[in-house]
Image 1 (cartoon, rainbow, N blue to C red):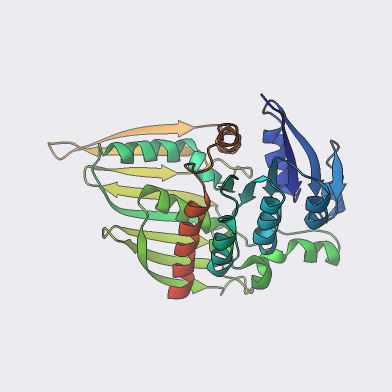
Image 2 (spheres, rainbow, N blue to C red):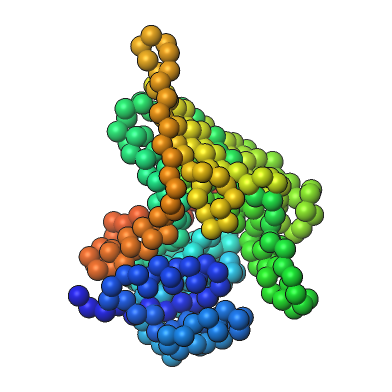
Length: 338
C-alpha cells in the first residue's frame, strides 16, 4: 500500500485533533502544517512549518490536505489545495454563505478525480448511525416530523491573555469573518442531520436574535422547515443554554426515536443515548434505551475519508460537496426567512 502524504492548513484545536486521528492510520505521514499562531505551530514536530497556508501550498505538494481554518478562509484554501493536486478534507462550515458555495461549485468541476469531503462528524456518532438504520428499514414507518435542540452557553469561549490574543480568537463574533453565529457554528450539525434523515427542505420560517450577547452575529435561532413531502422539522440553535444540550426527537408513523446527549471534547452534553419507542397493536408503547460511552465519530470519519481515497472512489461518497451544499442551502433559507 502506497504511503499517503498529508498537510494541514490550520493547526488549532480542531486541526490537532484531526492530526491525532490521522496519525493512527497506517502508511500515512504528515509532512507540513501552517498556522498564524505560534503556540499552535510549535506543537508540530514532524515536518515543515509555515505561517500561512498560501505559502505552504506553493512550496509543498501532498496527497491530502486538511482545511481547519476560520470560516473566511475555507473556500480559498479549499481551492488552493485542489489546484495543488490534493484530496481535500475541509471542516464545517464549508463556506461563510451560499454565495461562496456557488462560486466553489463551479470551480470543483475542474477536479473530478479529487475527493472533497466535509467534516460533519455527528453523522458518525453511534446514536445517529442507529437512528439512520432504523429510519431506512421503514420498520417504524415514514417520518412525520423532527424536533432538534442544540445549544451551548457562549458564542466564543472566554479567552484570557493579551488584547492581541483575544482579538485573534474572537473572529466568530464578527460576521464578516464568520458568516454567521451559533447556527453556522454549531446548529449546522443539526441541519446536516435533518438533511441526512429526510432532506429536500423547500420552505423555512425563522426568528433570529442577538439580544443576549449583543454581538455582530446571532445567539439564538428558532426555525421551522418543511420539505417536499410535507415533513416538518423544527430547530432551536442557541448560545444561551447554560446547561449544554443536544436532543433530537423523530416522530414516525409507528413510533418515535428520542436522541439525547452527544459525546464531545467538552464532555458537557451528557451521556449519549437513543430511546426507541414502538406503538403496539394494543395501543401501549414499548421502549428500549441504548447508551454509548465512547465518541468514535472523529476516528470513523477520518478512516472513511482515507478509505475512499485508497479505493479511488471520487464520485459516490458521503459528506461530499453536494451534501454540504444542501446543508448550506437550508442555512441560507433560515437566515433569509427571518
